[in-house]
Image 1 (cartoon, rainbow, N blue to C red):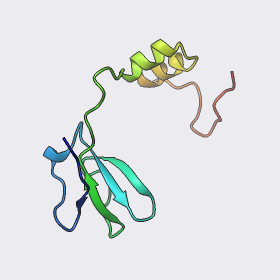
Image 2 (image 1 turned 135 degrees about the vertical axis):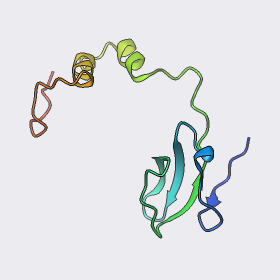
Image 3 (image 1 turned 180 degrees about the vertical axis):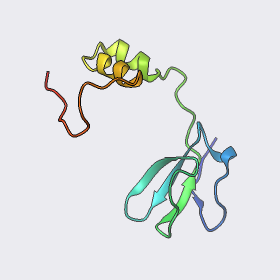
Image 4 (image 1 turned 30 degrees about the horizontal axis):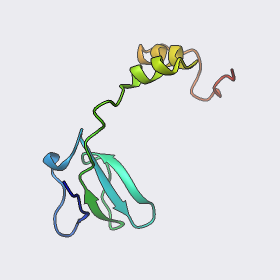
Length: 96
């Protein structure tokens, strides 16, 4: 399926144009951007939109990605997801 940019002046995207509630947008100053459905405040600098491609069939979830990576931040991610935080937002992340 070939996707083309649709001028915003031609038509606005609908929820059915989204993939996982996301669209691609063209912004005059920032170039290509991705957004959740109706996630951007549309202004005169957004000129085109496009339905994004389907996600890869073998794309891992966030949890799978971190488990496979064996990353030191997985414990922190799981704690934040559970609602617990060890540091204040203003504190810099700890090193190592």
